[in-house]
Length: 192
Length: 192
Image (cartoon, rainbow over all chains, first blue to last red; front, side, top):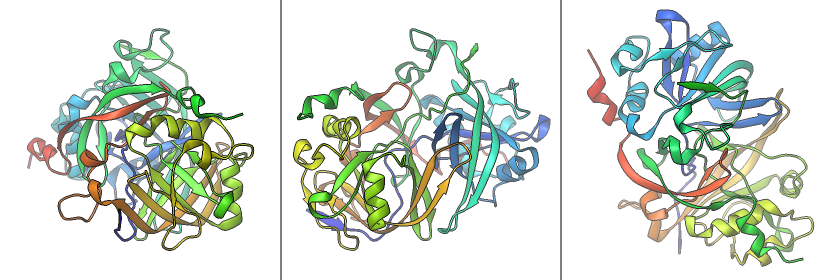
């Protein structure tokens, strides 16, 4: 039995990376749950970042940013980056997170985040639904050695233990049980 | 120690709803992992759907679609909707999923999916990174009674058991342990 709730915008579940921009002592970061892949060739990400955010000011000024995926154990640090503004708080100092130099872009990455994308701002859109969308081309990606798959080509989420966000619930979760391989387990249902 | 991987586009983890369009016997659906909220007032979603997909043809023709979040136990059915095309397979019949009428838009919703958005196509963008982005305004949302929170106002993911997708791994997961409440647990780190 379905209940009608009125129009909502939750998707279940979402990632919640820390988006960092600015250089040197100015560098600051924001927890962003409205993010998705937006291209393969070249690799790209789409994010919604309100123009009221300090991190948006930094991105607009330097045209570059990094997207840093935290492990589940850092949920307090990620939440902190969403509850205060970088305009009046030193998020890097207060969170205790460590910055490391990026290889291509000027803003740094976060050492404790096991998966990191370096991005160049390539487009912005003011959506008819009132939001401000940012498209970043990924110019380099990095991962902590101990989170890689056997081939060393990508992160294995089983090693990474990524932080998961439930938008409607406003709660943080861990990833749970592995169910099966995609583009594979559904083939049993195919009728020729 | 970080390893450089070359530019990638994974975000960890993602939702993977079934996006349905078309009416009557034409109705078909696609598993879409590139999706995010894209507005609150009005509620909106952003999705990347390649123009090669049959589901895109259906959306283009009727200008409406539904976004249906499956429970973890239906991972095979969701995967099936990503491995074949609706051009030459009757995905509704083969998946065994049940359609229910939407209240506002013409395409139906999926009964077995406990959370459903009815969407109207309000914008499209050809991104400079080669992808085709679709913005849907959510005109109504519904949830199965047994997945609601105590107030009956929204889904509780703890009841819904949403299917989770790991893009790089190409694997399906369950949601795991609840960690803490957002906009709250990080306040302990705030220095005045």
